Length: 607
Image (cartoon, rainbow, N blue to C red; front, side, top):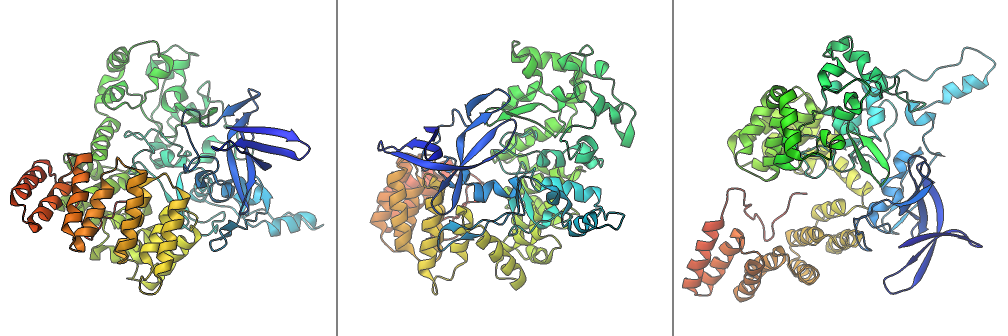
């Protein structure tokens, strides 16, 4: 629990620790204005942490921004955790001219910025000539450089997107988005629903990039005024949407809202945005509109639990009624929709169902929108063992879009086909390729190192650095990277496993086993930890210890084919033939084509 107090020491955040001790932290600033203001507190290492309580000025109330999530100390998303660190996660988009300046050795930030908030320079770049001419008696004033519609979108996307930052705070107005960022899309489960609707906080651009509007050339500034943040025309009376869809501008289908919606004029159901830009509430009070412009489809709610806009108004009606009404009014359009096919196929791909491959290939072959092609290629990487999937991934390496080529690069790791992508024109593609072939090209390796070093305040980057470090030259450095990665997210069991992978891959099996032993104590229900310890023991020839660990693994997870398979081998090595045969039978009965085969003492999971 956090309490904000104002006393003789100033504005403070007061919190009680698990041991009953009261800690106080000075409140150093605030981010946001409306609909919520989030306060920042100073913590050791020049860290500014965003509190999990905020003030909603429109309602004049304090709110728990993450109510119901039960974030506790040690969690990535707890207000004291790295996931709520302003320096690493918030500042670049909430200041102008930000430099993170993380000092890894000292474990502190020496961050700097030119101005709080978004200023003219954030979007217009270097304004030195403009300012100088404005101050001069000579006229006319030199205007900022004009930028293209594509550059305008890239400017907006730099902040209004869920993305990985690839360069050390180097993006400036006019730069290409893909040379500084890697956009997150629905090939990463959990961010979007399978039909493309927003689920987690994805900040607009990803869904817009997947829309037909974006494909048709619509830009952010066609609908939004950049300086006032208002729409160019009202959306509530459909004026904004009908500026194109009323006359067919840019090839937009002409729409009569009353006929199309089957709702009377001026009713909520007659408003385009209520059906095609449904809002999702984040941080308790922040309603964000979906920019994918998708179709409400109650049938997908029944099949996969995907939200539908109809239910937002008709919450008092059962789902079957919504499905029936949608079928009566738009049945053929929904039945034929690419959106429905896409949702079913991606839903199957999330479950690694074998039949998803043909669906992904079918969608890919006719897809005009680059972002969706990227999604399909990204998901096909989970089916690399199938030749037709690999053929599609190879084709993706030649796609016009860097989004697609970057996904193809990940899918081509370990093959010669990835090598040309190390020299791609897009940094996002080169880095994607280099993560699988870090020693193939010195320039790409240097770019990869710069990216990883800039993000040494993130667990996955630290683990990647550990895997790239020469164990013969710097074993202590590998240990340190793994240790710091786990400290940043100590309640994440996957980091313990991946840390053990990094240690084992470097030949540091004793350290890997120690880490796995700790993980087994912290996460006793996870079969992967005794299983991984067994692999290390077996590699050392200690089959009795391997048997003990493997028996723990299959007791925790009876449907674990690889554990049964390795248990059978261990039994065989110790002369227990009958047990070996029984374990092999269990392995065969539960085996599937998607079960990964270990390539090293420990298996590396997909990051």
